[in-house]
Image (tube, rainbow, N blue to C red; front, side):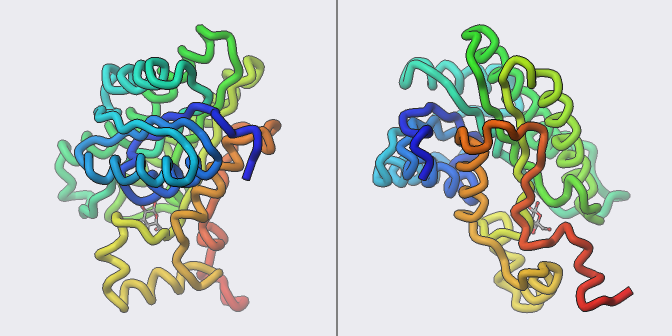
Length: 261
Ligand code: BGC
């Protein structure tokens, strides 16, 4: 628990499932006030709200399309109206679909980059404007992936979006560091979330993915949420422009395990 987080106001996009719900619950345990954004899964967002409130925080669910300026504005407006303030914006909403690149429809490329990259830009822009207008310090956390670093065949559009999130975040971190606005990424590896549910139900797939993780296990969403809480808190006050990988070592070139090569 980080005592400085109590009563801090956060927006989390894509809070209705997976890592978004785990971060929401953790923020509840930190007794924060949270705007839980969802796109279409209202029920999931309501569950996240309940988890936050049960844990001791306050929360509302707000529908918005994060790939639009109006959507992001609606989230800021909700935070101000409901909680009177904003301290932290977590750009978490994301999506992925497997396609061979020579068959990848342009619409799919646009859909994925619009949510994963344009959404991060628009959320960051909305947060920056609020922090600058209020002349207050600010904190932005962008949910990236190990695939901001590791190439991923048949997910080239996803990897491109995450690579974009990395350099966008580093650039913005540098641009606003002197204004006391921190921008960091979290890079989850293979985590037990609905996005991966089908893949990990298949024992062969589960074995393959696990073998690519030096810690030899799939991560729990709460382990990603713990990283978010640290980056949100003042305990990380001198940290900006990093990606904190939460990946059991997946980014460490696991093909070399055991001294191979
Ligand atoms: C993806 C997961 C994948 C993991 C490791 C994440 O960014 O969302 O589907 O299992 O990377 O490859």
